[in-house]
Length: 372
Image 1 (cartoon, one colour):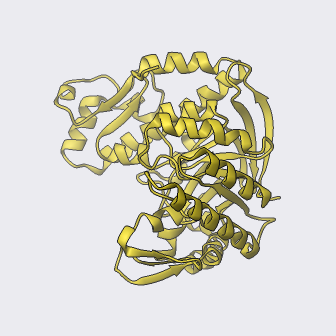
Image 2 (tube, rainbow, N blue to C red):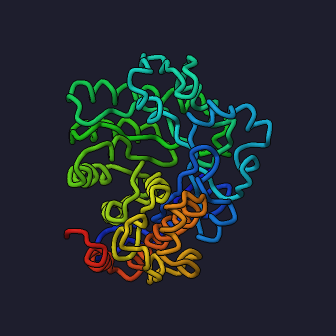
Image 3 (cartoon, rainbow, N blue to C red):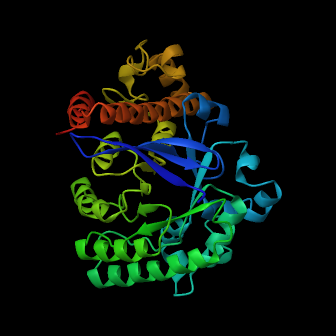
């Protein structure tokens, strides 16, 4: 198989997993946070900077790369790794979430989804087979099946029909996959917020025997407590010898809570997006750098952080850059936010190793200002 999971340890205190995911482009220590490079670039970051902060895997987006510059062009360039000068692992999502978030611009049928491009309004059609063809052309290490991501809230009957279609589409994706020895195809468990439907979806998707599994359809507007509840009863159905991926989650509290519930992999645009809006994640909570209180604050963004930004620049300077609409503002705060989350996951792995993840959560939440 192109991708395999190696279990190293289970935390005695929390039941969280420490492991490694082996891919054609390197080994990834898990639990791991994956920066998102939607358009074949992690916004404001160079590949060299991603390596400096020890990112081992990034995520790119099938929908966006299909529309621009086109998967055939990327294939001609030698694949996504070569095209973007990134020699570590890449996960591509199937485009399902982006297509379904188009709302009135798309129409779902059993065959696939017809939609209008958000760029120019042109008509397109993505089927499970097409989603796999695009990802095969991109050459990512981990590909995702084409699924239907249901909104929250949604009726039981709608979610049931949707997850059953997702299962049928997953079979079609597996049948269409032409490079299983070079690229791993992960299944996605759906089922909304309903325990019986999550169980049904987990059983159906796991029966198809993928090399890894994702929990989809969470972080779509539901309360965090409900997301944790869904994870509590979903992860026990997932195989212990394969990677478990929670899609679209990236706040420190959700990462830690997800790990405690048995998740290995996470991704989210949040750290890069809020950086461009002048917000930093720090060891003592959020710092909104555009606020007036930082005009004469010559301390680092986070005095406890060892990243390039915190070693070299003050909050006052970063505020000045933001107010002056300088590109460097987004670059420096993005660098810090990604470093911070990758470092949090490093601390989480260390806490698992020492059988003290619940203690770590308590200490971290107190400093960050989260409620226990």
